[in-house]
Length: 106
Image (cartoon, rainbow, N blue to C red; front, side):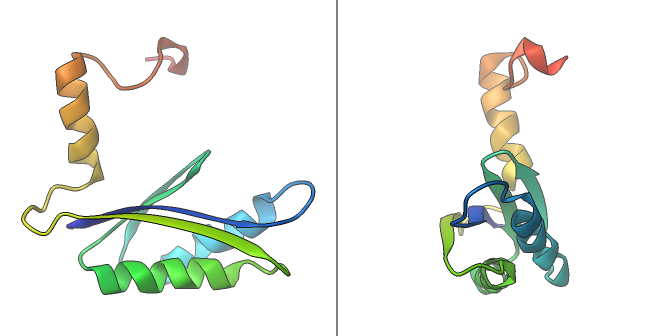
């Protein structure tokens, strides 16, 4: 997979956004993408940018609100097949440790 993106989709509402964010994440299941959700968004990997855009659009449309905020940051590294895990591993190699705090239990 060569296209990696950070997607953040959220309704502009008062209170918890969890139900609508869950709907956005669930919409990704209909696409040939790998993804991992974290507190700030969802990292998505796809073989091509078209698939990535289609998945992001589906996530955006899955949020049932009068106003939806979507941010999509794409890294389309066209000369490499390195995915998100390799990007993190490269940083960890230089750190000489996991790229997370000791409070994470590791």
